[in-house]
Image (cartoon, rainbow, N blue to C red; front, side):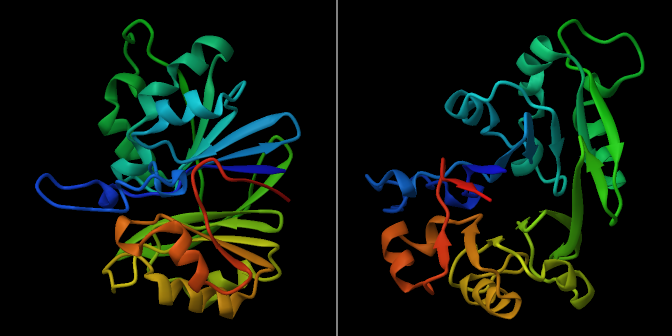
Length: 253
């Protein structure tokens, strides 16, 4: 299995007019972060986790042959707003499956009503097959996928475990019962927004505490805002088995 980080950033990393954000202006490509998403390549299948507003740019950069499925963590725009740009893949390959909690599917139906309408569709609109998932194992093309539920402030969100790899983003708390799903991992990907406390995201210290508790062989931090700092400076402060993820990073498991 190959995992590609399509984006490792957050909308909070966008410079505000009239202010200075040196990380956003860095000449280091590892500080150039699009909104969070990963590409999962397994056998001859390709899955996405989340489809944010940078999706088109990410696809032009990664250039996958096809998209067999999209898994959504939750309904916020920075994870869903690129869904319309799936249409070139639909033109090429036909219907595309999406997987999400029932609440998320309802929100997508509202936001993209022209895609999900049961009436005659506008020409060129992609056809998406909705698959409701719950907090239980499901299977896509022979790959077992285990949802891991956490809270994004008060909003339930899903992370996903594929084999000995787990991907969690936009979490602030994880129940002990859900942490049991994260034992014996080779790789854990976890959000770490900044050093300061945040109401709905792990900060750096909280993410490192979770990593220390779960003890994966390696961990990667994602959903990084400009306030966490420059990639190279932050990496020097991390434990030896913890890495700051960056756009286009590819890992094999």
